[in-house]
Length: 140
Image (cartoon, rainbow, N blue to C red; front, side, top):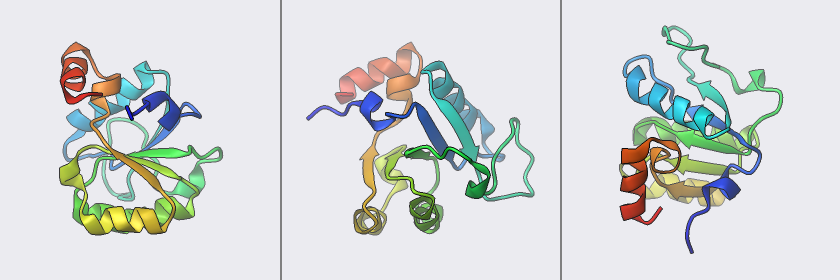
């Protein structure tokens, strides 16, 4: 069955986990693509001491109307510790940027917590022309 990104982000908002101060170019590219796609984006990073190019949320309690889905842009060693926080916040769907960003244990943890997940670059759905061509050939 083909992945329907509009169903995945059914409430038209997304928690963007791992918005980076160290490599802001990619984070900002994903952020802008989601906004251009009509989603309200909540950039999130637990590191309060970093300087970001946009306002970034450091505590999930600061979000009043939490999205039902998140997009994670973290390395697996950081993703493992964020999954329980996301589940506790009531987020039930996660889009992982790529298969290299997860481990079998992370996916098992998602299953145990009742979190639906998909492994797909968000830019295939919300990015520019080149990314959409990539998505077409990937079957997105």
